[in-house]
Structures are given as structure tokens and as C-alpha cells.
Amino acid sequence: VQLVESGGGLVQPGGSLRLSCAASGFTFSSSVMRWYRQAPGKEREWVAQITSTGSNTYYKDSVKGRFTISRDNSKNTLYLQMNTLKPEDTAVYYCYALRFSSWGQGTQVTVSS
Image (cartoon, helix red, strand yellow):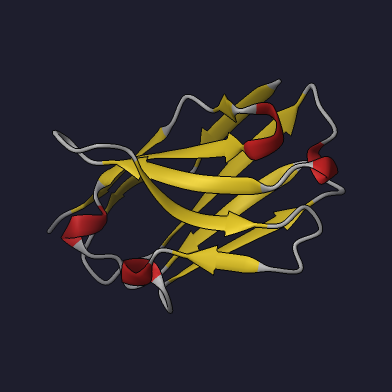
């Protein structure tokens, strides 16, 4: 199982980023997928979840209306569209395959002026 995140970077408050998570080594369409994040000095926290078919999505309250999780099972890729970013969104973002309890290496998102 391999998960590789990309798309992080430095963005100003109010800006947008789109994270991607490329999956390989397993049947991507069989697994619920999640995004987590970990800010400096804090515990890793759940951000969003999407069912295996993409029919249902769930969000942490603080990102509802700003973040959108999606997936393309034909491309074995998970996405997180992040809009109206805030400094408190600064963290390393990780994708997670629930069925296989597997993590990616993370991608840094920094929101700062």
C-alpha cells in the first residue's frame, strides 16, 4: 500500500490549495478514505472522510463549507480542495486508507501573509 500526497505549499489567508493523494498497491475503490492534519505541537486530527464510491462525505466542523473532499477511482486519486484558507489551517496534511490502516508521508500547508 502506498499513498503519496502532493499540492501543499505557502498560501496567503483567503487563498486556495488543492491537495492530491495518489494511491497504489491496493484496490483504491474498496476503501473509505480520510484526510487528517497535524499542526506543530498538536495531535493529528481528522479533517474529512469520503465513502468508497464517493457518494457520502463528512467534515470537521471548522472546515465545513471551505473544504471539499473528492475522489477519482479511475485515477486512484483522492483530493482535498481547500478554499478560504486561514492561518489555523496550517499543518501537515495526510491521507489515510481506512481499510488498510495506511498513511501517506504528508504534505505541508502553510497559510501566512
